[in-house]
Length: 424
Image (tube, rainbow, N blue to C red; front, top):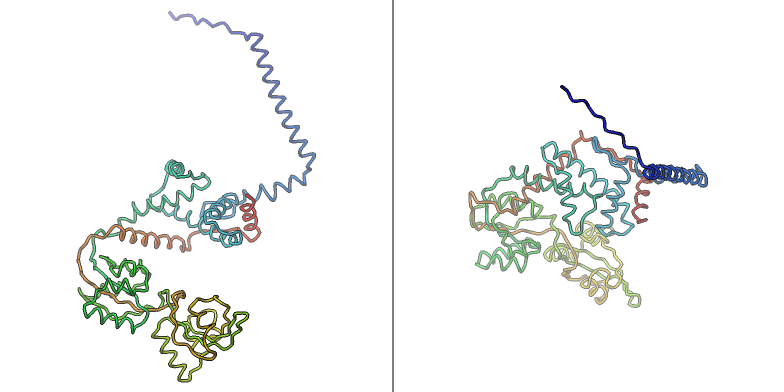
């Protein structure tokens, strides 16, 4: 037999409880009424025109889409935060902000393309991973910049989880020595000294005009094919090293585009004002003592200074004017000024070495000391290979015509963003 359900007696609120609830309701109605009254009063005092003046130029633009990368949209507020981050991080002057504004557009676009490309490869970084990185940074990084952190983490994951598989662990390698010299004549002289038994490292540390080879005293170590092209930005070292036999020393190898911290002046002083410390001169800046001596001989033989300067000089400020230049005190370099303000007029100088000037062109000497057909690649070189593979992958993403990238940032909107960055 079922038990009869006994209803519990309803508990009636006490007078004290009723009083408290009623007071709470009255308080809520009072707060709501006061809030609405304040809003109405503000609108009444300011007027609709002022409201529009605030909403249209300030609130609305911050939430307008300014960039689209495929299906992802970025508003003005996001863009301003990124611009602000790079402005403070790089410590640039306000005058540089206009150029930085364009750079930040590219940063946002490329970061999003990397994220989308990584997702297609099955690689992503979770929000919790990003949060952990933000918190662990010293000092902690604001969540406003979590996309920047995510992109950095994605690049690392791509290198370790995807591109690592595309880079070999073992390869043919060669132990390579190299030095960079100013002229073919000097390279031939040094080569003769090496053939006579002088030490490559000693001569490279003393004479090389390229920072890496000089700092390592010519010993570039065991390297697989392709690495030297990445390190030095030229294929000439790899091309020789991986076609030469063990123990081979190269003939001088020309590289016209490499910059070196040395140059040689040819100067003729036309006029000089001792009081104002100015001088009108004809000048040429040449890449080696050998070249400067050869050009000087041509001038002495009667060739035209202006013609040769326009053809050969590496001094940008005077080349287009045929070598004509007005010098002011120490405005160029001490080597230049010493001659310009102390020599006789209309006398063509001997080649004047100047370590304060940069010129292009020179000659490599390369030696292959040993060859190993299957040597383990150093981790630093594998990292360079992975970075190269990543860069090529990223460049393909950025240049893919199928990507839908739109920027709605005109001059006015960029100035709006810049004004917000500078107002903080």
